[in-house]
Length: 508
Ligand code: BG6
Image 1 (tube, rainbow, N blue to C red):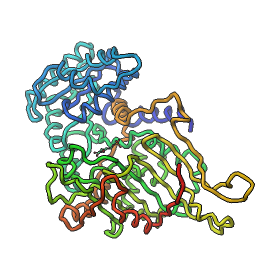
Image 2 (cartoon, rainbow, N blue to C red):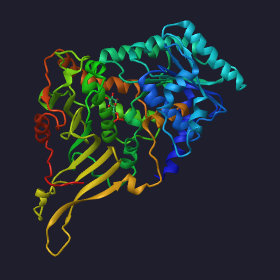
Image 3 (cartoon, rainbow, N blue to C red):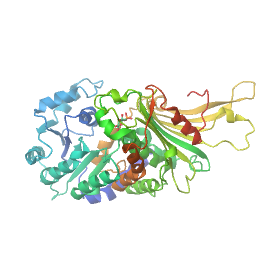
């Protein structure tokens, strides 16, 4: 499908279906207030404000209609917040003019997260902005971005609902953006969903998983369902195993206290990698309607079999506990390889190997689809390795297909080479947007496709909660590995047992 067509179809159903529930007849333009709660925190400084700035710079946030409000406990004035943010905004070729004009759009309101006065003051500031734009009372668009720890979500949502949301008597909308971690296990996630769900309707809640905003993750459905080539191959008849891998070459870097409560499974695998798994394994949705897509994601999650202990390897890097915020007896894994098995007609018997680790020897995220051996091979080329289709999410976005070809020259011998679509080579002029940029734009447009629905979240926790409980109880212990290594050797052994065949000597 051509991108224009995709876009066009996408926008049509958005107008027809998505907007129905949370904001009937809302104009796509008009007064927009973006409220960043937790404005002085790390996430806001490093991700939210830079993403807003990039949208502004590209013309998606017009100063005629947009105002940005920072809300936090610290006592400061507008300029203090602007100064804190300034250094995180990427400078373009045009110099700093656009940075200054963007910063002028930001106002600061100080208040506690359970303080009605603070939220009333916030409401007053937003309303003044709306009045200054002469909009009809109540027809504004208010987007609340909770760059806050989930423990305060329920009380903050209650405050927004009672004191700061748009009173939708003339259309308009209020939307809430929340960040992971959404709970620590099935019960706490359900509790959180229930508390927020009592205050806001599901179409108003945008649960961000920033992996869904990455370019090559967004490409997965196009790749799978718009290419005839893949349709007959994408199943148990041809695919031997599929890996989804996340590696970082640094440790918990000052986030030890937070990380230790969660561990690598909650931090990366249960959300980011599982979302990718949904998109590579789900059935074709009946349309691009976000609900149709998310219905298919839920189905595949519900088809995942209970995880077996012998298909899990946990690791913890040597030195992790030197962080003073990490307890000396921590059992928290910083590495995990987990094999998931999907019990359905397409995938029965195919291992989906999810692997994530901190302090490893490289930094990348990729999907590696390994195909089965060629039956009746006359070239004896199994020693050359299998076909693999690799989608590199980052760094240097790329897709390549490992093929066996004739070694060029007079001899008849085979070698491995690749069909290579490296984005930098192919799309010189295009700057790939940051995940957060795209997702914030989606929330403004009311597009829920790349956000996690409540039942998806529940199904995701159902898969991992039993394993997490055993880790939390100390019944399952991580193996120590050296920082800068591939992780524990047992991880590679598990990969081999799951049927992955490594090709020696192939370098892409
Ligand atoms: C976050 C995790 O969700 O994702 C971090 O909490 C991790 O631990 C980060 O470093 C990785 O994101 P990205 O986009 O750099 O791959």
